[in-house]
Image (cartoon, rainbow, N blue to C red; front, side, top):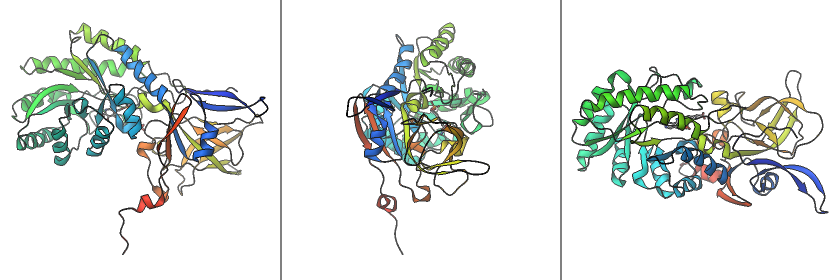
Length: 433
Ligand code: LLP
């Protein structure tokens, strides 16, 4: 079996032992759990996550932070299921949130409010009030207009809001344009040239307390160079702001580190941080508190989506493998032309055919993989890999499809962490005429 499984996934093909004690069939396992059995018991589409893979991914960061004052704030937009959040909260992580909904989820999962940072270009007054009410650690502010509103909201309840300004370093992260965020033309952050004035403005407002600086240049970054450039530009700004008498306590380098989807080879988190610290130390900022906001790199390769083959549809130009998962469950191929490896859970040994793996949704954009070489029959289970990040958290009910169930695997134990949605759940809150 030559199937390549992504780095850090805790996936392996193990030989199944049948009732007579004979080895018969290769079966894909996540940690110690056979995925075919899970698919049969819990049905498909089904997301399955490995707790060990998440903790290993986190350990790659913490290994790079030994001896430093550093906090990992998991960017929960990548996967905001409560049990996933619990894994990170129990491991001591903070959270990077972008909405009142994410704040509520993080708190429900046991997050320490002081370790929550609130990012995003469009926070509402209501969201600011809630976040101030529970005492979050920091607001990452993205415009002067937002500074004004936050100041007003904080003064209104007799508080000083802790703020960091998100700077737009104008660095090309060399990733998909929809997930690149650190260029001048992006809606994110305060332009490099305006940052010092924005800090002076913030420092003069009575409802605000400047605590940090942050940047985030994009997602699925597989090269250290853009990080090093962005760090340089951010450290220049720290110097310039502090020269104006405004101290900056923490430096937040955002998230963005990529994962192995298709043989991609991003630097290991610990190796990237060794490089970054060389730079940070050389510039005399080694003692500062460091924050980071990784999402994908903590959960992406910890999850798979199991799906059943419904029909094979050979054609003149294309062969189609129609499965029961679709763009509503796995939106990344449709949105970003993203590649997710697709492998059989119980491989067949006959010759493979080239086919497009597609879902049942009524759109030609509903594809999960183009031109894949597979040997499958109707009824087989396939695993869509690297599905731990930006899949379930972006899932929708398009075509009135119920969102999938989720399972967390820990060693040989599999726990249902989200029941499959029911159609009644979908129309709860709707009113008939
Ligand atoms: N911090 C901020 C301010 C962000 O905007 C993001 C992601 C992160 C941290 C986490 O980035 P990560 O470590 O996950 O790369 N849906 C897209 C990805 C969108 C990322 C948005 N921002 C996808 O499926 O590729």
